[in-house]
Length: 418
Image (cartoon, rainbow, N blue to C red):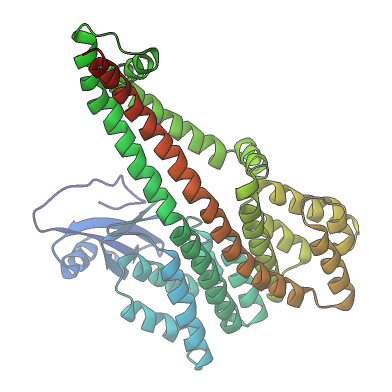
């Protein structure tokens, strides 16, 4: 069963494991495939029987159609941070690239990373550039990552490139962790409250409503409305859950996977007072840091702006950066003048960019802006959370209070009749 030359058939044998292999055919072509076997030696025997010369054999990972499929997880940002950091350290210590890859292949325990490193080594042995393997897996390595490696390889300064990449990835991961940490309590509060309200409306409230409605007692109008809503939700919980789930999927796809949806979302978030400051600061921080690293690596300004546009995470700033690159710099305008034509960026930033460009310190300014906005993001998130938390408590308390009031009112009215 050879993937790439024949259709791949999967079969299950007790105690067997999945192995991926890279091998050379008798005609000199390199193929990749996967096979179930009890050990690595069994895979080597299988390859020998098929007149294949093994290059690499890895457990729990296989490739089909140029994509990596992994048992036990893919390549994470943390993996990329360690990978770039270790490569930078080894190259700084004077280790040649092949030796550095051999050491990393032996040290990394994660099958996905081992498979990637083995493929990188094979690519280099065939005389292809270092960045080619990274470019094959865009789900793990962004265009910025690939282009920085490419620029470092062309300039012969991979050590500094991997140093910058590890620093950039670490800062991005730290920012994501801070955002997740700040939003953890509001998210837990929302989920817990949703579950409590759902329980009250679908289980507790209908039973209380039945007691009043079937007992011949006429509750107040407000209570009847709440009881009717509770009974409707309880009787149609499956259909309503399906509609809710479908709505969430449609919302997620439209607003996060379509250009029109992302633009709408950017415009909506830009109009919400509490959130717009956080969103804008995060986008500007990504813009400044990414453009700074790309220019430092020696990429042309137009390419740097185009790549930065894909990383800011804000559709309005993305379109603005693309206009700056295509309708400004590409037509002969200076970077400062091209930025001044756009209103999406704060005026102070466009003025600083224009001044620093004339002084020849654009890279330094961008890194300074990234550091400044990194601090601003943390303050903005704390301010946002300090407003969202009490607002959530008020809304949730109001919902629970309405349900409680709908139950208390008929009880009070019933008691008053005696």
